[in-house]
Length: 254
Image (cartoon, rainbow, N blue to C red; front, side, top):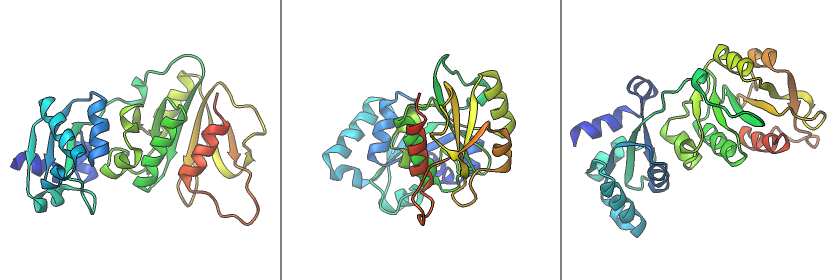
């Protein structure tokens, strides 16, 4: 018990997740999605709250039937490992993908990638992963300065989308190589860009969205073939990055 609890506590820190190569999926819905993905689960922690609902009890039975090491701890111990203020009584630990951008297997023909450039809020980052999955992107790529896509909050915000599409971290040089080798054009979203519907989108396209305040970086602007903007009514503040990305991806769908 102590070993699994200690690991879960340690994985609350990004450096520990990166060093050990594990992530935590927390909450009934998220753990259900993790199990449905057939990804190997290292272990799970539960507390008495898991028995409060039939759905929680069914999830506990599913974990045990899959042979997942499942340890029940006290409410206080569980809260020390949980990322939420009101935990649902279950979290699972699994191995994070180790794939790099150079190993990304992309199909021929039309495709879309979503690039996160300095998106700092983990909730926004997770929502972007979910939005990308809903709108058919083949992979989500996070550049330096972006929140950890494998934090518990990002995974929870994505509601299982991490387990349906490749979700990777990489740097500008790796992205540039991927775009060149896979013949993918990069468009950056920017407030001063051309109207998004001014030109037809290419068949193979990566769409970059930037930091919540500063927007995309100079490096992405230089790499992008085009900067595009969503036409908006005058006097309206810029949209939340996940909302803007959803509209852009829909407008630029193949």
